[in-house]
Length: 237
Image (tube, rainbow, N blue to C red; front, side, top):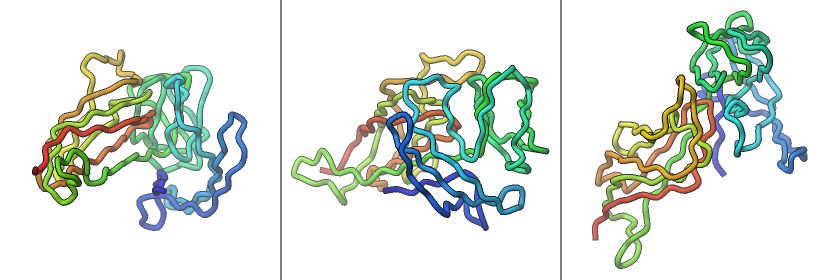
């Protein structure tokens, strides 16, 4: 079990507070998780009823709903949408027309795309950051466990499924530099996000004192699924 940190905050907390939750049978074979959430929005305490979306698999990027306390717009291509009164005074993340827009302000229930951009489908809401921290490595010892022995990661191999790599980063647990996950052969036209399935190699600036621990985060309102994580490392004999 792990903590799910929802977008928004309350009373100095960096994330929203779930006051109640219930699970009901869904219509597509997956259960529906309903949450009663408390946040400070625009300086006012507000409560919303939200439903968690099912994990994203093999869909169109425009259908990916990866925000909290958000709404979907589908219609004519427009530069601004309204109906976001519950998020007045907040900054939201937007996935519109396959492009990512972060930190857009909501005023009078309306949000506008920069540069005169237009889109016919929007996913807009509070952004959140997905994070994972690996445990100390304990594989590859010639005489058994390598727990407690110094080790250093040179690179990691990630097996990804339908993932927007523009928001995916990896970091040594001791070094402060986040390494972006890139595939030079994949070019997103017109700045649009693209989804990648396959394996990617990421070099890491690690330290011998880090015990082979790695941090992973995804910061965009787009899909990210990591199927496997394989480190390449050296360890004390």
